[in-house]
Image 1 (cartoon, one colour):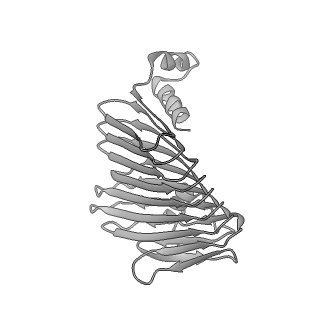
Image 2 (cartoon, rainbow, N blue to C red):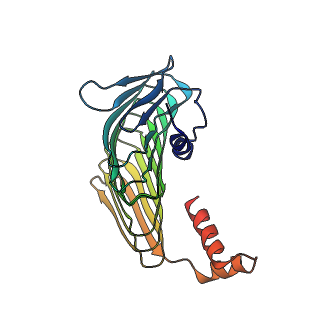
Image 3 (cartoon, rainbow, N blue to C red):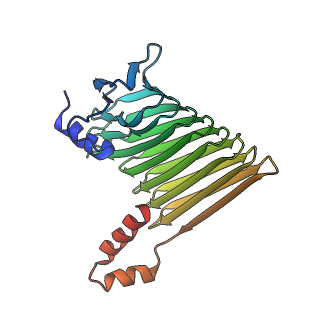
Length: 306
């Protein structure tokens, strides 16, 4: 039975208000809370380790699958292995994410390894949100690992965001893209206090006419620390782009290490990185419209992370 705190977490991380119409799997405090399958989407519990297999039938169109994880128990350490098998010519959206509500004095933690097998000509939009709350002194920790395999002419778009409240995170993504395949990653991160966030992307463009676009936008406040690492390897005729833009505030620290490696004469790769504070003229312009300095800062941040 889902309690009110868990319902609020589901709303924030997965846009779930009530029971969704499609397939879903809700994991709460380390166990299965509820599940539903459809004729085109099967969800099976693994027998050898914690986690699930999500199997999308070939040709499936327009379905959304929700697979959120919620924790409101202090001291819980949760680990899952989820595999996504996306059939040929499918076109689906997958809503994931994890929310932690910790009001205790022990660390609550979720580590997840998500492995995607995107079939030939398949298209996947993957949305993952991380959020932490609670007035306890116990930490809220999340370490997601995403492994992506894109077959011929497959397409995957990842929208990952750390909304707020996560004390420590290491976000690792590894991808291999075959002929004509495309990977698009859009990452958004907010840190404050003494929080620490590290992201590490590695993309191997192995296929002819494959492509990748990796974009990270982040805001670091207080005494928080952020590290962005991105490595795109062009191993064939391909196009790759990686970009990191960060706003730094207060006493925060941000490092960006974009890397591109061309291992083929027809690999075309670009990297960009920019870190800076909010421009004074932006604040002044909004303050002349009646906003306080704090309100103006928030408006700028909201627009930057939109």
